[in-house]
Structures are given as structure tokens and as C-alpha cells.
Image (cartoon, rainbow, N blue to C red):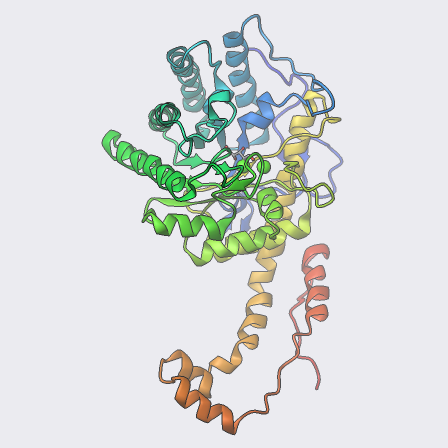
Length: 450
Ligand code: XLS
Ligand code: CA
Ligand code: CA
């Protein structure tokens, strides 16, 4: 069997003092944290498009990445990629993967040829899955790269394009069934618009919902109904995206009655593009009981476009992991590294090193968030902050016993309110201890002396 990494063994946990670049220093799959193993808390997945396809090209220059899987034909390269991908997954001890249809198989000269190629490659993927026990977290149809999707897929002004998109979704669901994928993602790259001068916004959104409903019925028909996920993103490529952020997407899900079947796949870099923190997006989804899965990466605040960097910011990841713990985990979802190596990290080894960095960052984030939760650091602060709702008038408001008249009577008697300080700088300084100290002592917030 060909090996693409002959000199690298399986990446194992060696502890924080390890100097081996191909070892985990924080991710210890069997370590128990808050009653679950790290492996259970962190269902990592690798993204086919960034790991196997991305070549380092940017708008100013061509290919930089050195890759050893190119064969004599497109289909041979596609097969080699599958071999290499499963070697990467196995060596990193990652149990899940995600892909777009166009990532794995050549599109050929017709839709029929594309579908045939997909059958050949998914047969091979299935073999590798059976051999290794690695699973498909989600698949999706790329309905944004082909020129036909210039004006959208389901939201296109052209009904023929809607039909082509529907065919890709049907094939995607057949593949989801074949590979037993637990989730199916819709990221509407071109589902948005350029200008209202030629756009019927409500009609286009109705059509997107029509396609989603067809997907639900087809899943029922074939007896494989994955958890459907919509992935919000505010811009790139569309100027106005219909799925701008978690809140906008929840409004869409509710408007069309898709709550039971659809949840959200939230990406860190998309949150920052929308002007939110990642934890905000996770918290919004959580408040609707719709946190499905996450795309783990980070953006660059100085750049403002979708850089899809590997997550290495422990601060942000800690706050994200805290939301995930508060959600009770990700259910059927997982942590997909929708991340690409920088153009200058062009060696084959960088694919492993970058994933190790992301995985260790999430392990550190998990340990920090677990300590925050164990010591009820943030929950105590919130408990205290809303304390006025526990007794007296606050309690009465919550119990529905008050109205505008009764509250006016109350307010006239009590118009001298004393607000408690949030001591937010003190809180942030303690948070630094949870994030950057070794957790050897209790950090917990102490009452401030009056
Ligand atoms: C692009 C998106 C995309 C989705 C899947 O910005 O992140 O890769 O995750 O289509
Ligand atoms: Ca993504
Ligand atoms: Ca992205």
C-alpha cells in the first residue's frame, strides 16, 4: 500500500513537555474531563476541500503546495487522494471527515459523468471507512463554484439551475445514505443577491425553502434522514447573503417551519465576518436549541475576509468550548477543521502539523472551559447579576403577576435604584487565570469588599 507519510507514525499524546512536533501535547483522547473522554467531547473532523484540494493559490500567485498524490489522470488523482486522506485521518487519530461532492470526484463533461465518478470514488471511500472505522460527519453539494450558479442555486432566477441544484442535492443524500453520514450541510455561497434592482428577495427565499423541503421528503423516502444543517455566512461570495448569521438563519428556519429537521453549522470565521464573536453565534444557536455542529477555524481581524486559518487562539477557543459544554455537547455534530494551511506552509508535513496545532488548541480550550464550569466561575457571576429577579418584585414579574399599572405603582415608591457594579475588569483578569495558568489552584471569583 502506498504511504504518503513514510516517516511519520501515528500521532500520540506525549504530554506538554514533549518536544516531538508529531505528538499531541494536550489532546489525550482517553483522558476523562467532566465525566467524558476528550475523544467524546471533541469529535474532530477533517475537511477534504482544504486538506486534499487547496493548492496555495491566491489572487496574486499560483500553486505553492507540494503534494505527492497527483496521478496520470484526474480519476487516478482522485483515488490517490482517498488513500492519502485516510492515512492522514488515521495518523492523526481523527474519526470523522466532511466533503463537498466536487472535492472528491472529477466533474467530467456532464452531470451524468460526474455522478458516475462520484459512485466510483464513494465506493473507495466506503471501503476505507469499513477498514478504519472512520465516519462521515457530513457531506454537502457544492452549488457555488460552477458558472451556472452565478445567480444562485435554489435562489437562481433560472428554473433550469434550480433543477440542476436539486439533482446535486438528491445525489448528495444518496451518498449520505451510502456513507451513513449523520448530517447534511447547506452552505448557500451564492444564495444571496447583488442588487434589489433586479431581485425578488421574498421569492428567492421561498425557493430556497422549497429545495430544503424537497430534501426532507427525499430523506424520508430513502429512509436516511440526516440532521440537516444550514451554515450561516454574511458575505463572500454574495454581497447580501440570505443566511447572514445565526439569528437571521433562525428567522428563516422558523418562517418556513423547518425547526424539527434543521439546525445550524456555525463557523468561527463566519462569525467574525458578521461582526460577532464565535461564542455569540454559538450562544444564539443554543438559545434556539439549534446548535448542530461547528466549523473550527479562525479569521484575521486585520484582514476582514475569510482566511480559514487553523484555530490557534486559546482564548477564543476556550469561550467557544464553554458554550459547547453548556449545550451538553454537539449531539450528532462535530468539530470540523474548515481550515487551510497558509500559502507559505507548503510541505506535506504542514497538513499534519497544522491539524495537530488545531487539535491541541481545542484540547486546551476544553480543559480551560471544564475548569470554568467545574468552579461555576461564569455561572455564579450570572446568577449574582440577575439576583433581583429571585425575590420581591423581580420574582413577581417572572411569575406574570405584574402589569404596567402595578409596576408603575411600585416604581413611584421605589425610584432610587442602586445598581451593582459588574467589576468586569476583575472578572476578565480571573478569566486570564483560567486560560493561561496551569489550573493548579482554585481561581473562582471572590466577593468584592464594599
Ligand atoms: C465557505 C464555507 C464552506 C462550507 C461548506 O466559506 O465555509 O466551505 O463549510 O460548503
Ligand atoms: Ca465552513
Ligand atoms: Ca470560511
